[in-house]
Amino acid sequence: MDKIIAKSIQLNCSVEKAFQMFTENQLLESWLCLKADVEPVLGGKYELFWNPEDKENNSTIGCRITSIEKNKMLSFEWKGAEQFKHFMNQTDPLTHVVVMFFSEQQSTATVYLIHSGWRNTKEWEEARQWFDQAWQQAFAALKKETTH
Image (cartoon, rainbow, N blue to C red):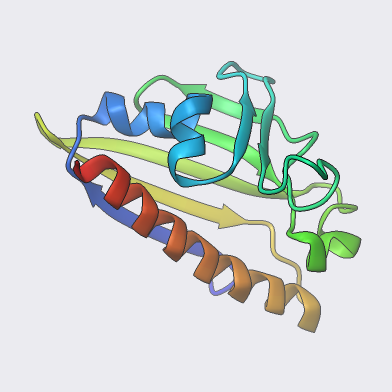
């Protein structure tokens, strides 16, 4: 379990809105990336770009949705940032993200995220720690985006 990134956050929005924040391109671009190309269906694209001018680096190009249940859960493949791509983006399987959505009340949703698939080397551990921080920052941006 120490190789898994696990995050949770309570959002001031409906569970439907929380799910949309992970599945609608325009909403993903408001908190997670500069450009999103997501097809919210099983096997659909889950491609996020942090530098749309250089789509091969700092992106999840080629990643797919591995399971989806509207307003309940979403899972997708994940690739590494540029400094980790030489090992993270060549593995089979890639790392994997599962996001679960729970409705607490009418206007509150809890989101749980699990990022797994980390290997047991020093460079993989560096990547895992980097992504642990990256997800923390992303969730802070998500909370800010769903608060107003």
